[in-house]
Length: 218
Image (cartoon, rainbow, N blue to C red; front, top):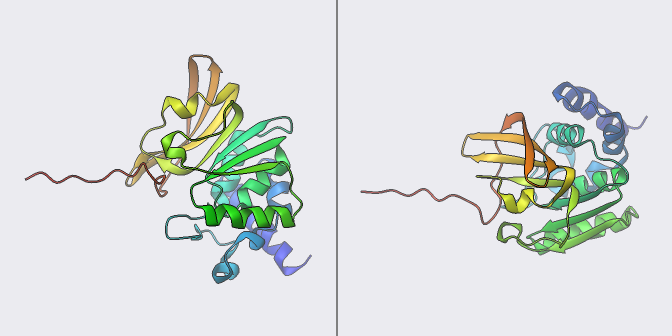
């Protein structure tokens, strides 16, 4: 096993599995996709560190343990369609693409989207459709999905996102403000009914366009 393969395996054994990322198929996908290929050159030596790696002044990669945990919770099937809000580096996009039928991934930063497109193309991943748009304004592909992954926090998960789900579809989102945020798995049970399960507490940057500004009154 090469050093880089060992580093990938160590991330799964020491970060992802202890934090609840136990899905065997998902962990194989995390192992198979070269995370170091998607990490900015400045951070290559930290590709498998337990941190959120900066991609720009407003975007970061999930830490490996969050990637593993969200994939475990979502339990993505090979016949399912996925909407990802926040393409970022394209790494999680690539992993998810190995698990499902198709991915639509939206990114507000065109440069990030273009870079992800190059990476995905280099790995011959062809079941991903990349879009540039502002998801905070309700921009997303028409239709509904089996799985929705929201890659940044939002003050409140609103119906415009929940209604993107097919019946039995799942959404992973991080809800809250400031230091009080909770990762949630929401499953659509019927046309008007959803089940919400809290997964873990965390802190993440808020989705661009949904930032809450502090008001001071005198």
